[in-house]
Structure formats: structure tokens, C-alpha cells
Amino acid sequence: MSLSTLSILGTTMALTLAVNLVPTATVLSYPQDRLFMAQTSSPQRPENRRVDNSRERLIEQLNLTDEQKSKVAAIRQKYQEKTKKLRETLRSNEQELNSLLSNNASDRDIRSKHQQISRNRQEMSNLQFESFLEIRQVLTPAQRTEFSQLMQERRANSRNRGRQ
Image (tube, rainbow, N blue to C red):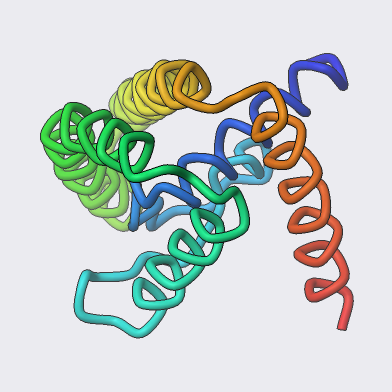
């Protein structure tokens, strides 16, 4: 995967996090799927409050107008049900894979389930990217530039937290 593709995916994932489209992530962590690794969290957990606060801070930092806030909320709503259903499917498939791994399932069955999870993740990534593109259209050129800078800072801060 090229560096520009990783950068685009990273920015897409960061925007998605910022607008709280996907508050949960994968249960299993495969080394090849580092872009998708995160702790699983439920809506009641404090981590999601941090995401909400993060989203609110981002909106404040971008100085979105009321009209822009309304449009972003509509875009989030549009993708919310799709991503919710896909997250549930992904979780179910991951649980099934865990079960297959802990039992005497065949390698073929395990591979098949893993491929299904990979397709789910790709679909989630596609939804996130499409929502990112729609939200991007709401931002002014200056806000796009500011957003890009904020995401670079967050990525740098995230990397630094991981080293501590």
C-alpha cells in the first residue's frame, strides 16, 4: 500500500472518528490490519464521551456555521444506520471467527470467515470514505486546510501517546 493511500486512509479514519460515525472497532487485531486496530467500546463507555468531546472540539476549532453543522449532522445520520448494521455484522463475524479459532474448525472455514471480515472492513472503510467526501463538500477551502492541519497534529499526538 502506498504512503499516499495510507495517508488518505488515515485522514479518512480520523475524520470518521471526529464526526463519530464509527464509535466501535474490531475485537480481533491482526498485524496486517493496523489501520483498523482499536479497543472495542460500547456506547456507555467513557471512551465514546471522549469521541463526542473530540468531535465537538473539532467543530469548534473549524468554526462551522449553523448551516454547516446541520449539513454535517444530516450526513452523519445518513450513514449512521448503514454503519451500525455493518458494525453488528462485523462483530458477529469476529465472534464466529473467535469460535472457529478456539474449536477444531478447518483452515478453509477459518480463512473463509477471515475473508468475510476483511470484506466487512473494506465496506466500512468505503462508507467512511464516502461520508468523508460528503462532509468535505460542506467545508470551505480554509476549513479544509485547517482540518488537514488538525488531523496531522492529532496523528502526531496519537503516535507520541503510543510511545509513552
